[in-house]
Length: 148
Length: 144
Image (cartoon, rainbow over all chains, first blue to last red; front, side):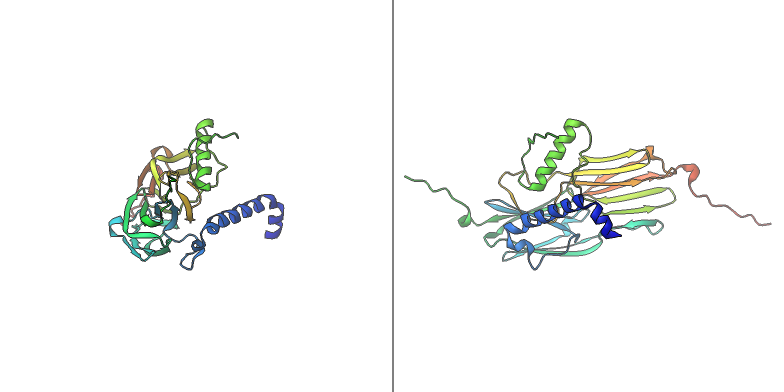
């Protein structure tokens, strides 16, 4: 039955599949470490995005409703680790229909490029996103060479 | 659709997001074609009403929409703090859309006009009370 469904809807489905594949290639192609051994299955809490610029890397952790002060963020060499806990208060008198939100302890590690400066890290928390900005080493930043 | 993107962002995803936003402003209606994230929710009912909590990290109050249309409750939000910096390139992304959207069917016993929504640290809490006449009543049994 599912096969017939797929066939009937095939232009749409194949379009989605193509898009997903393209996105995967787009994100993993540029950086081999994106498909790294520390990567976790989709839906893992918290979700992570990493953006790169010539002078810094910014890691975004999608961690709504946490106590950001209790987060443990550490950087060992180029591996960034974040440990934390999310409490979701439950009403014992209530009837639950859906309980999809993550609760409990979490830990995520991500390998950043090697040219980061572990001494220049700053983190902030806004609207449920933890933003961790790590500077790149001066020496590895692109430089304009002038011709005299 | 003929979109003019005047906000430039670096990621492919964010660029689509900007398009959606522009479309929305131009046409005055939601850009429903944009692929949206489905926020994780908890839904629970008490004697007084029903509560919905949704994880929408990155959404600020001004980018959130909670709308009731008949019996349909729509929750929609846009991630606002993703990089605006021109020089930023995506390296890795679990989150590949800038929009959260999910809708729910309400039933008649809820008073949609008395809905209360609150957003804190990316968690949306929506409370909808039940009509007083429809709340469960305890029936006292008299003896004698």
